[in-house]
Amino acid sequence: MRHLLTRNLLALSLALLLVSGCATTSAPIEPSEQRASEGKATAPLLPSALFAGGADKFEAWRCEPASQHLVTAFNDETLRLWSLHGAWQLPQAVVASGARYQNGKISFWNRGDKAQVETPRGQLQCQQAITRETLTREAHPGVMFLGRGNEPGWSVALSSRTPTLTLTTDYGEKTQQLPYMMSVMDNDAGRVVLENANAGRFFRVRIEASACFDDMSGHPYPARVTLSIDGQQYSGCGQGIAP
Image 1 (spheres, rainbow, N blue to C red):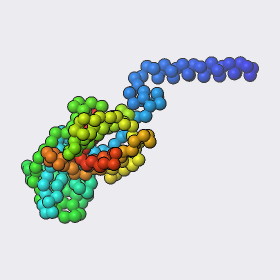
Image 2 (cartoon, rainbow, N blue to C red):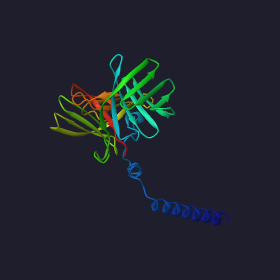
Image 3 (spheres, rainbow, N blue to C red):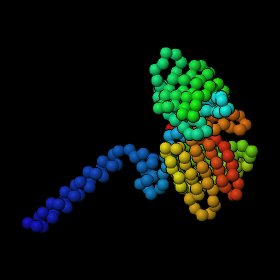
Image 4 (cartoon, one colour):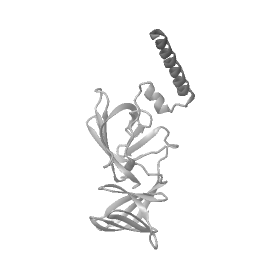
């Protein structure tokens, strides 16, 4: 009787294994799942404050007093706002004229190319300046975040697939791919710090959600980027690129 029960249990286990195997092979496997199943590391997710949130452009605003500068990105229902002090997402509120967005004590009310911003720090009167179309995955395939700067020209592109970055320096003369590890991830503050994943060559990339403006073109970005490598430090701007 015991042998018969054992054979039945083995037969049932084999049947369940075959069924689960068929279910697995019949369903498509996403590339990230495939890589994970092969033991390959996947690229970490970045804070949403580094992205445009579905907007197709960034706007720069010059504000007074104190000559403060802001960056915004609008979609149908929300406004993403970046200043030197951080980033906020403001849902749209109903007003009689213009467009008003508010989140707690922070509000943004614009009419055309003018805006009024209220924060716990005070009130700002703003004038829209330059705008820039958002970077897209179509134009930058396989790139999840792109940061760059000038004098000398450099860029750092984070892969959307694996924890590797492509570093370009000396005005595009030198390009190399380097693995990285994430040493700091602060979703609330929109702050990320990446460092070398091996001891061969030290580098650090610091990304912070903050209003940033290209020092040559004046184009607005939602992140400040600082690259430290080979005893040198480079500063620039960047943007997360959504699929």
